[in-house]
Amino acid sequence: MEKDKDRGITVSKQKDMPEWYSQVIIKGELADYSQVKGCIVIRPYGYSIWQKITDYFNERLKCLNVKNAYFPLLIPEEFFKREAEHARGFSPEVAWIESKDDKAKYALRPTSETIMYDAYSRWIRSWRDLPLRINQWCNIIRWEVKDVKPFIRSREFLWQEGHCVYEYEEQCDREALMILDEYKKLAMDLLAVPVLIGIKTDKEKFAGAQHTYTIESFMPDGKALQLATSHNLGQGFAKAFNIRYVDRDKQNKIPWQNSWGFSTRLIGALVLMHGDDKGLVIPPKIAPIQVVIVPIIFEDSKKRVIEEAKKIKKMLKDYNVELDLREEYSAGWKFNEWEMKGVPIRLEIGPKDIKKKNVILVRRDNSKKQPVKIKDLKKKIQKALDEMQKDLYDKADKLLRSSINKTNDWNEFLKIINNKKIALAPFCGKIECEELIKEKTSATSRCIPFEQPKVIGKCVHCGNTGRYVVFFSKNY
Image 1 (cartoon, rainbow, N blue to C red):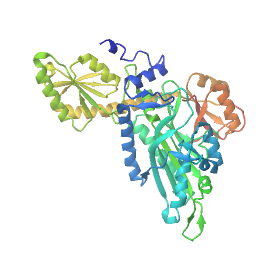
Image 2 (cartoon, rainbow, N blue to C red; image 1 turned 60 degrees about the vertical axis):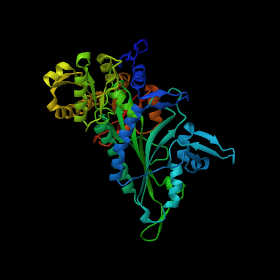
Image 3 (spheres, one colour; image 1 turned 135 degrees about the vertical axis):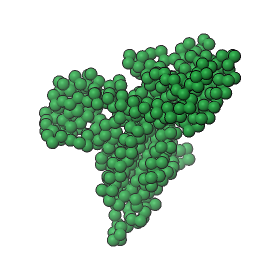
């Protein structure tokens, strides 16, 4: 078929990662570009990955007693003006619309603190109403990009955002860190993506937050990618939106708040991290299709092979299994397509295999073929899926660890950044110094690790006393 000649990935991930990424996303049928500038269409295959992430996290939210709710997309302009630092932080990327009826201006939700906290001011009256834990799954609009990188950066994306209110600062901060740990587990256990974990510098923290905690991944092209954040918002938003409660001693008090979220960027991270020159490589725990069965069809044995393939699919009902019975494509063509879509396990079965009571098991990540007795198949499938999940994580973790370089010397710092690695270096913490580092190197601070050395040393850039060591790298 003429139209299928360029169906495969035509560029190398190592040589041209931006073009490779675009091809993998489009040809792997995760997403498509939209006629709406700066936006993408998430296709069913891509959305099913997002659905698996949401299903996983909703189960965790239940355990944490967090309730799901939904708030309006439109946010009154005056809400943004109530918290000055928050308004300044988001003003460059807010999209506005104007009502024809009352000439009021409304922001299209860039984040939901303000619209949610207006409601909280009516819902919270007593200490008995606390803690209040609410999560929202929704779309976000940020007018910040012209060039779309699907799932990584676009004007509209999907996310979850949790917004909680507490009596005590200690409880607020403890649960902000607890959610960060949940994010770390999601990235590592589900997506097989290792992360750096820590706190953002003052320059990089969320607008209006007291502290911002983060998990950061590091991609094979030498760029960091922020995967999720959790913020201790302090009492600033509560003061701005008049959230008050009467405590146990009948005193009026101001509560403490945190917020936290991750987005469809997680899909981009797993594509960048695990994909290869054949296309997607999807970790088994997150794969929409875990096993694909491809019968090897010859006319004289067609019926028998298909019947056996259907029995195998039924046997593997505990997994997400696809049986490819399309007759218009050859087995080889199907192999290439399912490899491009990143399905973890391929089972090949033909007349010779049936005679031996075998199937051929092929793992997507290493392409190794293994004959397996049909009677042992369930056990072997589970073992292969578990091993692939672990191997993908171990490979990514090795990349991350080997990319970290400690230094306290500016010239060495420059070499590390130019070599597309992560520099772990002493830093004074001053915003002006951080801005100069970015100006000179294009590198940004990713996070301040929670574990700090006893002796920090002098700032790698300005030579003043270092407050802490910080991870620096180029980023998406």
